[in-house]
Length: 80
Image 1 (cartoon, rainbow, N blue to C red):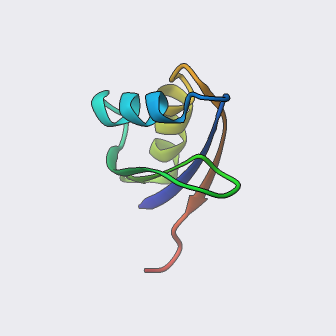
Image 2: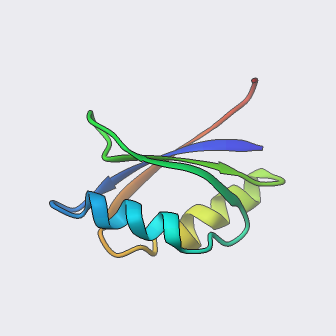
């Protein structure tokens, strides 16, 4: 299963959050990509995991735990 995780960061934290995500192990999933972006979100990450539960755990235990992350929105890929 693949998911796009849109991440909002606290002011001036986008680069440090992106760097931290690239350098830390993500529990329960594999992190394929982390990009800082312009628009309503600050960072887009792509995760791959065996199931929805693993995606949820990866987001809540690893991504949301990074200092500077204020909000995440997860979009599961349903066809691709």
